[in-house]
Length: 148
Image (cartoon, rainbow, N blue to C red; front, side):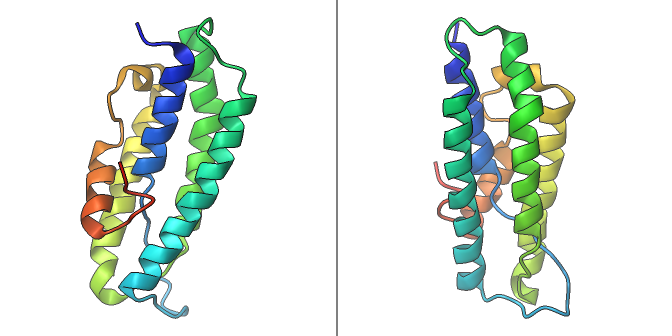
């Protein structure tokens, strides 16, 4: 059986990998080139990864933590953090050529995040609850958000 803290940390890493990118379509903003989009999305992921590290240190979960405690941490702390990250990534404005792929990543991610939110305890056992978004992020060329 996996240790609860390891499970929470693994889920957190998977979440950060899955939170690859989101697209906006606000035409009033200047669109980003592919390299600008990747750089800005990866910076957002870097910033949220740092917040995640701090949260995990403060969570006080250990090998004695129950599944319910871990599920509560996921639903009360991790899901809202990643929803904030999704919102921030969504504010980026991809160019027309990248918009479909970028928006597909966020749509997939939000769908997968909803599954985790609906049943955080099941996410504990999932190998990668964000496999679809992670794969799409990697294919898109994201380095931090879609890295292994």
